Length: 290
Ligand SMILES: [Zn+2]
Image (cartoon, rainbow, N blue to C red; front, side):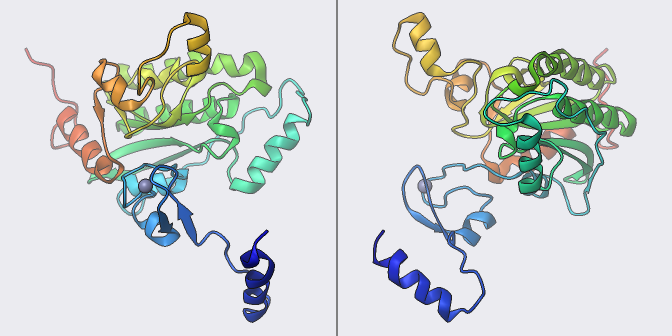
């Protein structure tokens, strides 16, 4: 406790009457430790204006930044909640309800359709704040729905992944989402439609080990942590010191795992260009060379 929280804050709160004084008007960049005004940070798509560090973006902000105006969120089918009646310190059903109440979302993925730089697209994005973006039946259902919609609308599928991996509270059911999402994205490819993955910080575990590494184009945001197992586990297993930048987007690009690392401010334009390249001006698939 210092004089600000003990004395100044209560004074300010009295001054402003019953109105809440937002305590998070400023945000400290975890990279360069500069203070940034929240509104400026949001305007800059949560990229630090001082050092370019990419902070996490909410699913809603992500979709707004990717689509042109007038995109629509789609209703997702309900997945069976808590199929194993799982409980650790708390019931899974309670954790799920909490996450839903806090986020206003049913599960960790939001799907929308609209246009990206004037071209039809279906975009699915993970919300890391929802139980670490973990993949259970709900997330699997969302990705299957997104893939079906892409095929139905003859539109490319773009997925922004950000996930801690499988949702352990759903046990084997969560693991089954790995083949399920792979099949879903295969449907998009079979229809001759582009499937583009953007790996955001962090993408790990069962999500990296399934559909998230199968994009026709693999993009990542700068500095994103991407991997299967954690660096510490790997270090202990192989008993070697891992190279600097291990499991970071730039390192993976250098080693051929990614096609491109794209700054958030240039993401929409890049996606638009890729869709144009992969399809002709009418939005039709580019015919294969004879
Ligand atoms: Zn910074």
